[in-house]
Amino acid sequence: MTAMIQLVGLEKTFAKTIKAVQGVDLSIAQGEVVVIIGPSGSGKSTILRCMNLLEVPSVGDVYIEGQNLVDKATDLDLVRAEVGMVFQQFNLFPHLTVMQNITLAQVKVRGRSQAEAEAMGMQQLERVGIPEKAESYPRQLSGGQQQRVAIARSLAMEPKVMLFDEPTSALDPEMIKEVLDVMLQLASAGMTMVVVTHEMGFARAAADRVVFVDEGRIIEEGTPEQIFNHAQHARTKDFFDKILHH
Image (cartoon, rainbow, N blue to C red; front, top):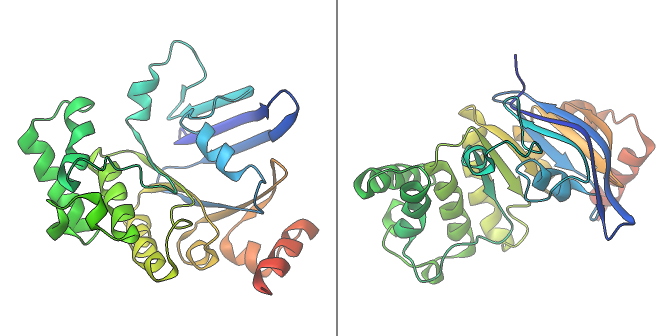
């Protein structure tokens, strides 16, 4: 079976000297939920951003369903359309309504009619629990609602994979749960997901596999039970000591 995402020998160097990622191999199966954790500046987000070539690896290969994104012959836009991405910042167009934000790429990239795109948009807004906000503008929404719109916008493209880059870190504490709840539903519905997050409760509840990254390398990976309760590596234990005792 072809992995949904495969990273082979991934390295990323910034400014010729800073090795953000050094020699990462990672394979993610269809329907798997993988949560990447680690200290700030450990390279977690860089690894995630290499998965759809938002960051171009210095060395190594990135495969989505067996297609190498690093290969010049690969149509990146075509592959990227299969990979949804949700960022810290919601990246919604402020001058467009929620529905317009959600239909834009469907029409342009997926070639759907406006009516089809709107029907899909409504379906996804219902999925994230805010169908009544379709005609609102982003500024009229809370941060949590804006992030749920951003998730709905990604889902409307019917991607095969969803990447989340610290999706709750810009939110006020009382809004984090509403976004994580949507992500939990997605995970239980079988979406392939890769999530970089500081939310350990989410990692415990949703992850099939937790990957601990430090200094650009995968230090340890396993089930949430293995990683949280029986970490093998001193650096992993040290990381948990720091975050759990704050």
